[in-house]
Each structure stands twice: as structure tokens, then as C-alpha cells.
Image 1 (cartoon, rainbow, N blue to C red):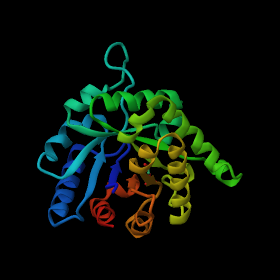
Image 2: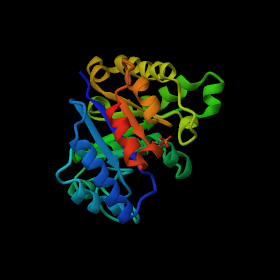
Image 3: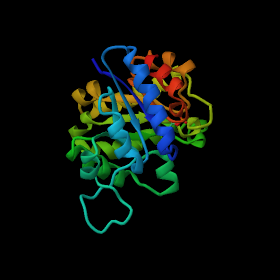
Image 4: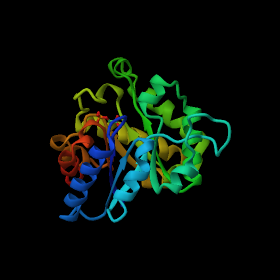
Length: 249
Ligand code: PGA
């Protein structure tokens, strides 16, 4: 059985005081009881990792980062290595988010190296894939996602089983236009079938989560789909109560 995983992605939001209030509300909410057999996490901006790791010390919510360097150490100004993240108590790192692919030119090859670096330090990479609106509208969505997944398979091989894949259709991110549960399920199924061409074990055990305008009012239907193993939640994760409602969905 694959565990359901719900991860918040704050993106470039937060402040010391906002984070403190959020962590307190979510911590209290989670103490009131969460469905068993699920994993919850939140990916915060780098400067807040230390603060959040302290605030999360006795919580079941796991700490995540929004990126990680492909390199171990050295002359890489502005980069943050997996070993540094590990030292901060980070358990998840998003890699290849479409905002990074599009705005910072991250390519599949770099993304696979970042995922590998995270795995080397016991951090679960959340590898994001997804098609643009154009690709979806012209019937090329599966082909576009297949290419992104294939590149990860060729580099990571069976280490992929320790990663999470986040299917995030780009047209659904931050737009309020969520993919229908069936549309998301179809893509998750396609990814799982593609992975089965490579290795049945990886295909059966890897968690594939959905991201793109997940809210409390659509999470239940999405998470009920057989190949959807949870969610990567952007905008809705900024509101503690909304995030808790999604975790309970
Ligand atoms: P959204 O973002 O939930 O605000 O659409 C999801 C993401 O970018 O991970």
C-alpha cells in the first residue's frame, strides 16, 4: 500500500511571525487527530528552515525545501546543498518545479542530478512534471510528461522508487483551474504504466502526487483516485485551516 502524502509548498511566502502562527495552528490541528497512515510535510523558503525545524520538533509534520543543489559543495554561489538541508532536518525537497523550469531554465538532466543529490542525503525528492496549456490543448500532454519522466528514469534508474513524482499541469498551477479528478487520474495512470515498462516494482511502489489548485473542496475527490497518492499544495497551504482540511481529506 502506498502512503498518502500531502505536502505544502509555500513558494516565496512567509515571515518569521507568519510562520510561527501557521506552525502553531497546524500543530494544534494535527494534535486533534489526523487520518492514520499518511505523511504530511511543508516546503518552506531556505531562510526559514531553521526556524521551522525548531517549531516542528514535536510535530508529525515533516520539513521540506523547495529546491536543492546538484552539487555537494564548492564554488556555487547562491546554491544550497543536500547535506546542508539534511543538517536542518529536511526530509523532502521539491525539484524541477515548473516555476524553476520556466523562470530559471532548469533542464531535465539537472533536475535528475538534484534528485540524486537529495537521495544521497536521505531526502525524498519531489520531482515535478507537467504539461503546458498548449500541449494539453493540442493532445500532446502525455507525450510531454512522458519525456520528462523518461529523463528521470534514465538517470535515477531504480532509485526512483525512493522519490515522489508530482504531476502538476502547468495550466492548473495558481490559476484555480484544477484538473478534473479523472483527468489527473488518467495522467497518473499513464506515468505508472510508463514506469512499469522500466520496472514493475518502481511502478507499483512510487508515490505519484497531484499538484495544481488543490483545495479543501476538491482534495477528497482527487485523493480518492487509485493512482493519486496525495497532493502538492501551493496557494492553499498558506492558510493553516485550509491546509489542515486538505490533510484530512
Ligand atoms: P497551487 O500550486 O496549489 O497554488 O496551484 C501548486 C504548486 O505549484 O506546487
